[in-house]
Length: 139
Image 1 (tube, rainbow, N blue to C red):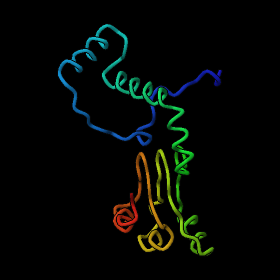
Image 2 (spheres, rainbow, N blue to C red):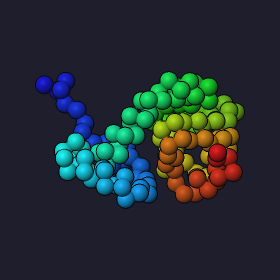
Image 3 (tube, one colour):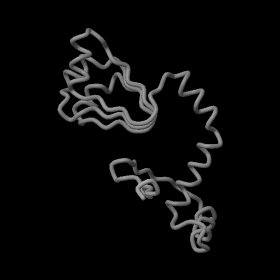
């Protein structure tokens, strides 16, 4: 029975809110498709359209991810991860397509001492102080 259970919506913490501007005619077309039952709401239409475009360009995106050496998906950096890097004398280059998160107990000083660069295509979750400490290392 558990094999057929699917998550219908991502959890609130798994999404990022964005705002887009659409022309009235495009918006009207979306509303028409929603009213006719093709989509449950505007968000459902927009998510589906975005996923279709991502799938359409999947091979090019896959090659770009490999070329740029990006971690794909969710990548979390704990205080222990950064302390281990510091103990090993290593500087991290964070390159993520998706979500990169830095633990809330990471100090700005530890982040600066262990993170050489940050490049995130998607979202970076970190304390405001850590984000500010890494601002000059972010692309």
